[in-house]
Length: 108
Image (cartoon, rainbow, N blue to C red; front, side, top):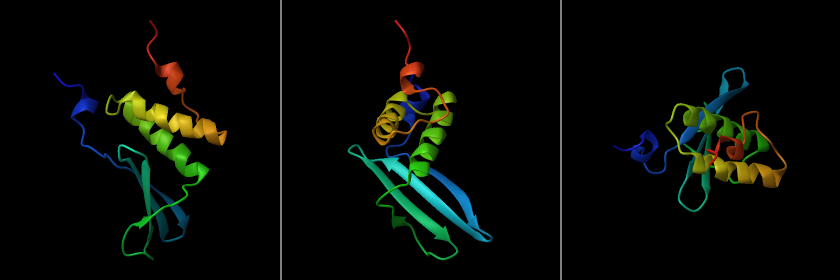
């Protein structure tokens, strides 16, 4: 039997939104494409379609980490991708609120 995360779609997108002004929302979408993280954004109602997000903010990285951690807790996402984001956060000198991937790793 496959674990839940093994049966997930390739390039599973992680998406969230935030209110940036009254009646204006910023949507962000990120996914791993087997080489790097790909980011897109949309500002509603100004934009008609998604545009590439070349330089995600520190808050975007932290939000991605939080979203992935919640999926991991529900056994819907593998730890290895959280480890990848933790590596980026460490390089940026950032730390999320949740346990690090090292703390989540099973002990022998």
